[in-house]
Image (tube, rainbow, N blue to C red; front, side, top):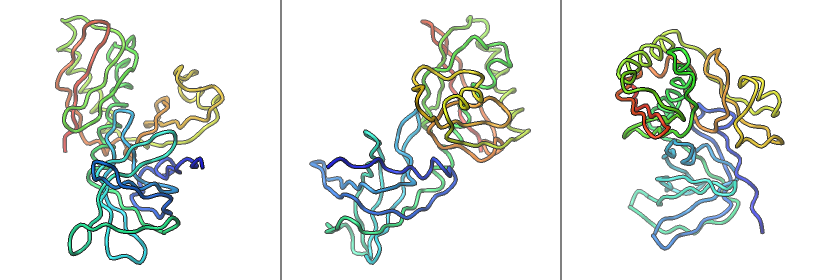
Amino acid sequence: MEKSPTKLEYYDDMWRLQCGATLLCHSKGDDGRHTLILDRTIFYPQGGGQPADTGFVLFDGLDNKFVVCDVRLKDGIVFHYGSFESPTGEFEPTLEKGKEVSLFVDMPRRKLNSRLHTAGHLLDICLPRIGLGHLEPGKAYHFPDGPWVEYKGTISQNEMQSKEKDLELEANALISLGGKVSADILPYDEAAKICGGCLPDYVPKESSPRIVRIGANPGCPCGGTHVADISEIMEIKVSKIRSKKGLTKVFYNVES
């Protein structure tokens, strides 16, 4: 029987860290990890250059918890991977479909990942402001071990060092001003208008994409989590710009 897509609760509220859900399936893989499939989730599954949320799941009526160590999305279904723990250690539960559960996301991890992810968007916004409007957004890696954003197009060797400082200064100026960050699922035509008149080719024209707006700037399609206000990024440090073979990569981090 085909499973219905998992409802993504963080789509509607990126700053909510708890929610209730219903268990649809529980299994154990050859690697020893347990897997939960729920009707809904507040956990962000790894993707879009952003790491997965971690946290735990509590089961109604049971004195134990499921520790979530990884979350993945496949064909609309979210898979929660982890292990069960009780006050006496690990155990092997028998769980029935339909059991009610409560989900709790690790707040510090979500907050850091959201700051890194939003900072990447902010760098996109700043490029035209420092004379690099010809660079087109490409890949992004918003993991704490070394976040970067990649753009299609190159700049000269002489520009790299000066643009590092220009980009950092421009981004931090916007952070100091602050501005609301919001996400809405919109009809295609309305989404295109908010995003400057068009959407990337990978967004189907019959779809209703989720559009994120960073302050008063044009929006962009994005499925990730973000801060509530630009000021929460606190400070961006641009460590390096590398440009070659038709691509420019900006390495950065967020300071506390």
